[in-house]
Length: 88
Image (cartoon, rainbow, N blue to C red; front, side, top):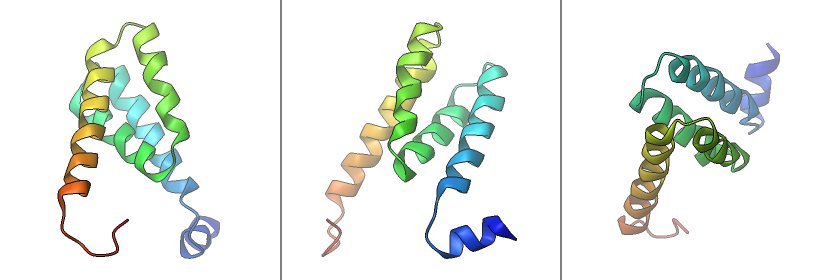
């Protein structure tokens, strides 16, 4: 299966696409936290999905944009606070 082979070789594009498709599905249902978590995961895997945040603001989904940015900030602070050697 090509997607399994891509994952085995360290390519995360397939996971990013899955996160973005599910994000769009839940965002269309007017949910907040599920799409925010999915968009956060996509951004953590690849940075370019962060470009969806200004789009969310432009179309009036302020709460979803704010939830996504808030989760990204919390995740970053948690990663910085972890005392794991060689994390960075």
